[in-house]
Image (cartoon, rainbow, N blue to C red; front, side, top):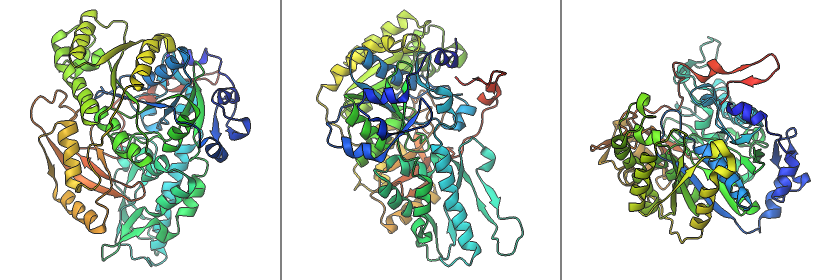
Length: 553
């Protein structure tokens, strides 16, 4: 039985009933049908003096192209905590339509560890990402309209791009304004995927609608002839964009198949953006439950690093425990075993691939000072000899292992992980950042590259060198760094899986995001607008004669 069929066989509880479990009143909900709701502004004020629960971060090793079930483990863990009698909830990101119709085909967990209603969440949900797309593109329209009517601000260079929440490589660079109408200025433009838009980052990092407006006003949209920045506030754009986002900024409440409450809000990618759900959702969840399970995108070198160095730093929160997800097949994949062979027992390949896991463990435990447990997303055909070898290697590093079968058994299959995580949250921690904000831009980049990735050094293109000098001259050098890098490797080469030889990180471009308040560093051949694979997931997605959606998994 596929994920969508499993989800349809579960009777969901009304969202008002889910809200009651965590003390949310009915008049604090804005219902979107029976099973989805947004939270009204007055809830945050009412719960502000509640004690915070424990925060559990779920991250992973560097994934294979199809992912390793990190969201499935996150959902399973939350259900597992509920199963052992704890008051728990989830705080996750919203899926982007790009991967849904591209590679993944869905991002709401799997098997008996899913959030629901899964079709809604994977598709248009409550319209948050569409609102972000509209706000982003309204700003683009305002820029071109201003130029059409005389360019009073003196735009010489425009750095703001349009966006779309689909994988469409044709839109990476475009020519626009080609109608030939009098006053319309042709220019080169481009599209980012919506989840890489600065508006998405701003929404996820904002603490309130007022903070949202301030951050939107602070966006640099272009430069004049004197190379002085032009801000969105110069176009008086922040008010109208905030109006488009007034509902999108409110966290969304749904449930797991086992009726554990879940906030799903915001969806920045972790390879090209900061990869975390909204600060507002996380902070509200901490006030409403004793244990909050949240997730950082892709491997810990990207998602967890940004969670700590950007989200935690900005919002003054700290994880009490970190779960690193892996699969036996992914470990062998990182040991150089071909995709076609990774289901077969191979102790030598596993031995090599464990290095990837141990590097992530070392980073989180010794570089960031956090309490770590490894969760293996177990498959029925996993080899007992391989599991024994992995246990032995982790015991040598004093790291606890849990075999998780949440896909097949839901919360019961994650009960062992839940018990071990509860114990872990009670241990002392001493969280540290990978760099200090006062470090120079290059020092921050190099500390991440050398200490977190294990690179021997960093090379900068001439364009990147110029951009660093420009950012320093503008007075923004103390912002945190948001690395844009392939998720498949510690290096910036997606084919360098083992990373057993010295490698260098190649910085191609640097983009200042003054609204989001971080500096994006593009490395290797990373794109902020992905493309579709040769056989996209869309080929299997359809609607049948009964009106049911099929093919989302």
